[in-house]
Length: 265
Ligand SMILES: C[S@@+](CC[C@H](N)C(=O)[O-])C[C@H]1O[C@@H](n2cnc3c(N)ncnc32)[C@H](O)[C@@H]1O
Image (cartoon, rainbow, N blue to C red; front, side):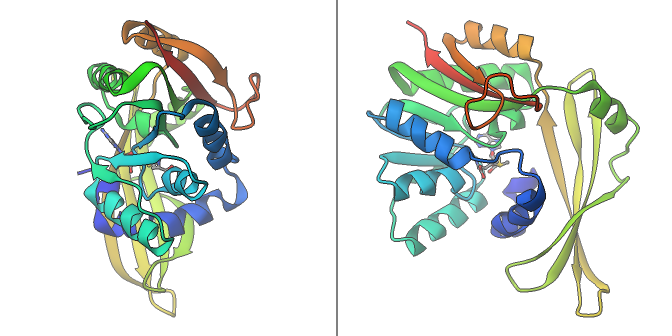
C-alpha cells in the first residue's frame, strides 16, 4: 500500500493539497494547460491516467471534453466518482494500473498529471507503462506527463534524513472538521533513485492536543532528463515539446519538466 491507496488519504487529499499549494504551487495553471491540450489533441477522446480525485478529469469533463479517468487506487477513484456525481458529471472512471490497463477504446490524448508517472518505481515499470499507454493511443496519439528534474542539493539533504525523521509540512482541516498536522520524513537512495519515507497525520483536539496519529508510506522515483529521452525513444514515442511550466514556457528555471510526446509510427 502506498499513500494514495488509503481511504483517509484519498478523502482528505483535496483538502490538504489546497493548503499545500496555497503559497507556492508547483503546478500553477495545470488544469487549463491540460484543457488546452485536450482541445488541441483530444478529438478522439482523452484519458486522464492516475487521475486521483479528478482534479484534471473533472475540469475537462465540466468543459465538455470527452474524457475517461483511471487510477490504481480504488479509494481515489471512489472520491473522484462521488465528486463527479455532485457536479452532475458522469465520466467513466475505472481502477487500474497504468502498466496494464486496457480500455475498450483508443484515445488521441493521454494525460498523467501532477507526478503520477513518478510513482512507477523501476525503469521496467516505467517502460511497461509507456508501452501500455502507447497501445491505448490512436495512431499519432499524444501523451503528456511531468517529472521533477533530480536536484543534487535536495538529494544530498534527503540522504541525511531517515524514514522517521519528521519535518512539519502543513496544518489543514480534515473532512470531519478536525485540525490535522502533516509531517513527512523522506529519504533518498541514489542507487535506485527512489525517494521514500512516511507521511504522518496527527489529529488535534480543540486545545491542540494530539488525539490520533496515522503513518502512511510514500515512494517515488526520480528520473533524469537523459534517462527519460532514452525511455521515450525505446517505447516508441517522439518528443513534441518539453516545457518548464504550465504556461508553456520552455526555459523556465524550475525543476519541473512537462513532457509532450507523440506516438511514433
Ligand atoms: C500525486 S497523485 C496525482 C493525482 C491527480 N493526477 C491529481 O492531479 O491530483 C498520484 C496518483 O497516481 C496514482 N498512481 C500511482 N501509481 C499508479 C499506477 N501504477 N497506475 C495508475 N495510477 C497510479 C495514485 O493512486 C495517485 O492517485
